Image (tube, rainbow, N blue to C red; front, side):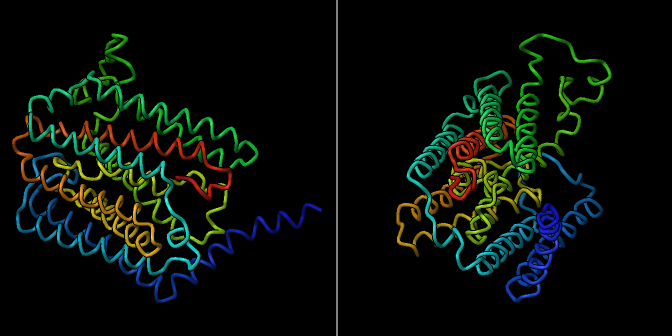
Length: 370
């Protein structure tokens, strides 16, 4: 009696691989594949020029620059992002969430509030550099709020994992997300070192940029780049991929752990708060892809007749463009280049909390996660 289910389970990966190969061989799939290859090639070419031609580190935090090759990189990534997102949207399933589902009023309200908070933070930067710098310092409310929001998000995911205890794969995936959120939160506050007052071991202090009890400052630039790009990819881009799947696929329990478009909307401020990492190809790619995704959601909502949702995503795109332009234009007047990253990390944490709330309130199928 158990042979049939086992055979079915064993054949599932083969069916998925066959379906993926069939899709990639179709014209729409080939277009997506070509855009993805172009994105990878661009990363290799621009990085190679900077590393071997200019002697720059592969990852770095520095004032934004606009040399000819950097302007060419921006233009290339902009065109590439529009091409890739447009290709994905054209290749979507006919019964996808993008065409048939709308964001709820709660998601739109929370997203609008996050965007408004991001604009307030940007205005603070323009109006009072000293206050903006003060807010970015360690052990200030912004840093502790970032850690607290991540821990709240982890608790929410932990609560949701209990609902998936009969689904080991989903529970394992949720546990990994929970663990990642806790690690990031504790790294943010150096595992409570300044609160508890314990010293950094000598071996760690020697290799840690700030001599703190954490790992991310051993390779600060690398860890920040991975975190920022990964967070935007998960919070703002994964929701679009989810919305392009067939409705039947989104009912798989594992998809309950993939963020929805409401989370992407709440992550908008984190998308535009780039200055010290703007020169990096991967950071710009994540930024432009998120902007293209917002445009895709706005266009789909307008087509469905949901003007409020269309306006929300257009506002997110406009705020991101304007906010990023302001930081690039006036960033050199920032007291300390890393200041804006503390605000970016806060809005990433806020988006993770919104994501966790959507997972908690969504049904097990995950078909309507925010």
